[in-house]
Image 1 (cartoon, helix red, strand yellow):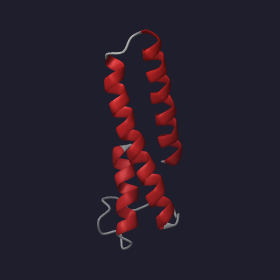
Image 2 (cartoon, rainbow, N blue to C red):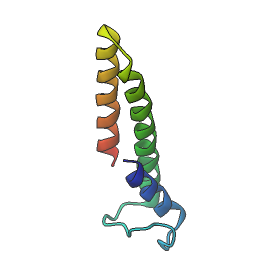
Image 3 (cartoon, rainbow, N blue to C red):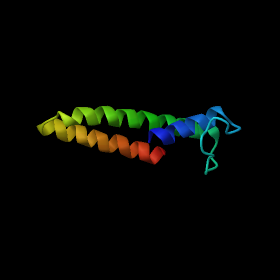
Length: 80
């Protein structure tokens, strides 16, 4: 997720595709790629943080954190 989000963000800032390590395989406007890339990056960071907290969680709190990780990852996957 982090690589895909960074790829979309670099495609926005480099219209000639100089910064992006891989050329885009889809034809969306650059602003859409930027927004989706930022959503993917944010969801990846939130998933990592929640995952670390989930390792030490117990009981109802563990279930709530697991649900948050699934929702956040789903949003990131849809944006990607």
